Image (cartoon, rainbow, N blue to C red; front, top):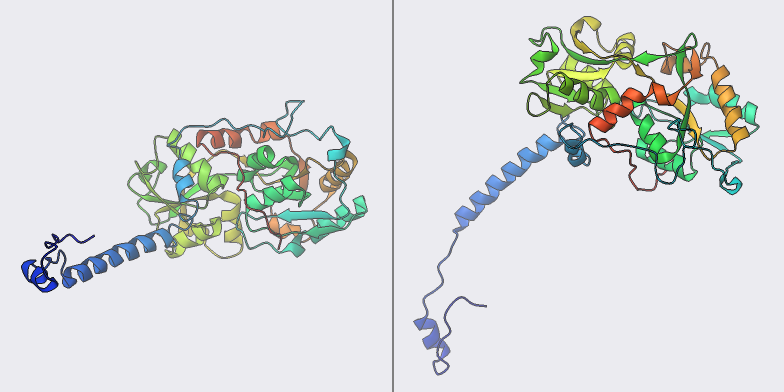
Length: 376
C-alpha cells in the first residue's frame, strides 16, 4: 500500500502526480552502505570469537555448556526408566526376559580416546584376539565420532564391548545401560589420575587463587578433569566462572597442554588430566619445566571397561574373565596405558561416587543425543 494520499477520482494521472509531492527518502545510499559495513565488521568479529581455537567447543554445545557451568540448578541423575537395579549397586540389571538377551554372532568393540582421533584400532587387536579366542566369536572394531554415538550404539545393540573415559562413565551407565567391570590397574590396584591446573613457568599465577581475572582453558564438554571437575572444585574454593575467571575451550587435553606451551591457546592456565600431561612429556611434545602446577585434585578412577547389559550372562562372564586376566606387557596396549599393567575389578558404586557428585553439582544431565550413530 502506498503511503502517499490518493488523488480525487476526477483528477487525471498527470494532475495527481503534479499535486502529490514525491516521497522523501528515509535513508541515503551512503548511510545504508555504512550500516552494512559496520554490521559486517561486527558479524566478522563475533564469528571469529566463536570459532577461534581458544574457544573451540563454543559451537553446537555452547548453550548447554553455559547451562552446565555450575551456575544453574543441580540435578539428581539416576538410571534411565527403561532399566532396573534390583541389588542397588547403581548398575543396570541383566534383562530378566530371556527374549531380551543378546548373543551376537560377531562382537563389536570400541574405545573413544579422551583425545579423539589419536587411537589406532590395531592397538586393541591383542585384547580383541583374546576375547575372540575365549568366546569363539569374531571381534570387530567399530569407530564412532562421539561419545554420544558410542552410547547410542551400546544402548541399541550396535556395540557390545567398550571403554568409556572417566567423565562419560556415569552417563553411559545411566543412559546406555553400560556395565563397567574393569579399570586399568597397576599391580592389581586400580590406576588413577588427578586433575591439574597448569600455568606457564613464568606466569604471575603462582597459586589457584591467582586465577581471578585470568582465563582458564577447559578441554571439551563431558570431560571430567578438563571440564566438570575444575568447575566444581574451583567453585568450592570460591572461584566461579565468568564472575572470577574467564574460560575458553581448546577441544582436547593435548590442545590445552601444547597450546599453553606455544601460545596457540589464548589462556593463562589450563585444566588437564595428570596422566595425559605425563604422556605429552614422555612423548617429548612439551618440557615439564615449562609449566607450574598450581592445583592438583584428589585422585579419580581411570577409564572403565565394560559391556552392554543385554549380553547373555555366560557370554558377559567369559568376556569379563578374559579382560581381568589380560596383561599389557609385550602388547601394543602399553602405549595407550603406559603406567598400567592390566585390568582390575571395578566397583562402580564406590569408585565413581565423586564423579557422580560432580555431574550432579554442575547440572550435567545423563542424557544422549538422539542422532543415529554411524560406525566408520
